[in-house]
Image (cartoon, rainbow, N blue to C red; front, side, top):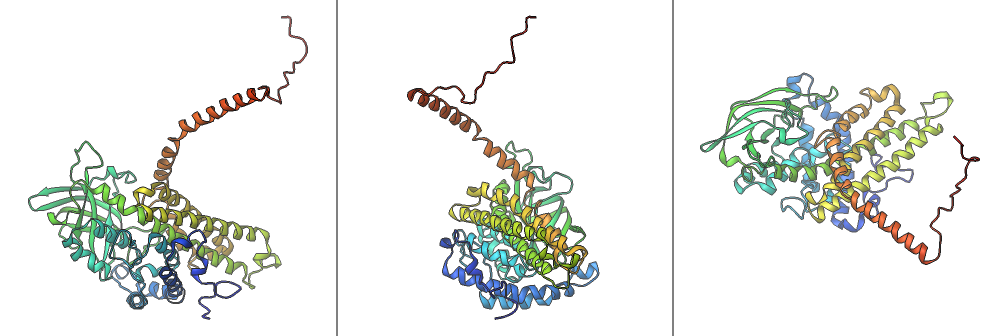
Length: 470
């Protein structure tokens, strides 16, 4: 048994043996075998390669955003040979994937989330996953052959451009980037930021959301999605945005401007006014991917936490950390929270498999809020156990916390999902009120039928002396 796989006092418990019982009926034998391969690949190949990747990027800004670490291509070659490639495209919606359901991929994505390089090594990295889903689901044959095929082959990367710096982009109807028809072309003008992936020199295509019909009375029909090659004249990448000081190179998050950028009209996806339909179809499964990777991050944080409190060299107040009850309570709470969050994510994945992202809005919103909170809480506990080392570069925890914190913002901030959930839940209020009142009335009628007094049994009617004569 490889020491890189040992995960318990009993040695190695395979990933397939740890699938929650409630999910097992939905997981095929092929998926179980692949899940074990994913675990082995991540633990033995990808996590050790993370250190190599970080050093191969370079040091200066220009180097870091011009690099392509060789270790990635080596890992991609190994992943392809193992059949660990494009697992994210759900079989009931796409023919281009590896033949797994959202649930099955969700279980795999948990392990990918434990490594910086694993998702890209298996061609399952954001934003390419969502962009490939857009092209596979909504693109025409020409668009698929030109952009989807090289993305599926891992030959290029992509970026999704939606958010803008000058407006409240949590409400996507506010976006302002103009997409104006001019003969056989569209002309784009405006800004985008948090354009994840735009810094990578292999990023060859931008999927851009903008406004083609700003005066349409239906505010959800004003937007369109168009494909923009990265080298189209008029595009400027002004800067890369940091996340709590991390630049996420070479992938990065770009601030771009479009100045009279002309692209062929054939680059329009699905048709004018279909932008909201496309982004909703894109973001639903993507949120599940983020959530499952976040479960993997939380598991990794708990592993580091357990390692620290069992380190014989660390004995505050004369005892190892696991001898202090507060640490064991934090471990127990972390275990409960991670397992609960995982079940919520798997439930959402099953719901998507049974219908689609639109049919699982409630379940997706629930995990979008729940999982990042759980992830951050567990990481925070691990950081606390490590003390100064927890916030330094000597552990991955600080970077994990920075990445995890963004998950409460990306793909719709918590507030948007909570508002949606609250509104939809509140619609049931009048029905509950009427049902409760009806049940009370029936209870009163039953009391009369059985000759039971309707008087409250705790009723006293006690008075304090005679009434005042004033």
